[in-house]
Image (spheres, rainbow, N blue to C red):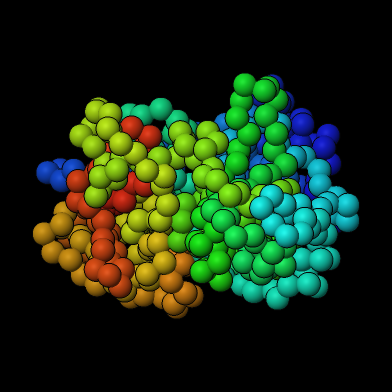
Length: 405
């Protein structure tokens, strides 16, 4: 299998030619919860190969956001799944027949695995898990922070299938003294001054977690190129900066990884909340890791007009970092009272959990509808937005506003 042609990708990734491809089809009050989820802000919609209409953040590198309407279900369609690259150029064509995954470093045997090797030499396992960009919802931070100004759609949930990473490492033979494992993809910086995107995990983290995968399928299909074809790392419960796409090389280290993307980037304040006073600089930081509890209202959309007396089914999703969602609650009176929503099928602790709530508004007027979730540890979302200078791991109580007429 090959990705869509390089010519198509290069045209679309060029800033001048991007707009001409939009819409083309390709085949293979008193509360401080912050701004509501809202796709009505005038941001352009674009259509890239293997994708439906997504919200454009940047084209070089591609950053494409999923519209909120797709979060009324547990599984995000492949074509609607968000896209996040850090550097350019990105791979625009990969031949799975000639692609090889190199496993080396502090191991007994260097391996160069083909796609057929991954599929035949290792057990195929699956896990349903949320991939969420660390900066999802960054545009909601106040005061504003630098970085891609994502709305709330830099996330998605899929069933990922592939080989356990620990099985692959065991075949290579991890030597005594191994500390960390780095992952590198096919995206390569155009200039030597730009650090290549390399991320790492502790060896113990991998060997003790059978859910960390080298995935080659997404919802039963080969990965879309923009979501990592031919293979990517999947780290359920952790933010997606660890989920390296278009995987090319895995190296085992006998020393701490100190590359830019570990030592400097993707770090949060070393405080219990991962936050500091707005506008200040943290004294110490640690790498970002586990997802926080979040919940969203996908339907109705923000600013919707609803007929009085008619039944409307509110719908959305909730998730956390792998303990599992136990309860979702809504408030129709700005947080004074909370009502329990109906939870959908439990697809596992790393998955989106669907929820729904039937409402028949009898009184006309403006409503602010709030949603919050609780995981099995009792953790929930904060009522007041927590701030950090990178705009990471937002998990405040979210809301929409509707008008009943």
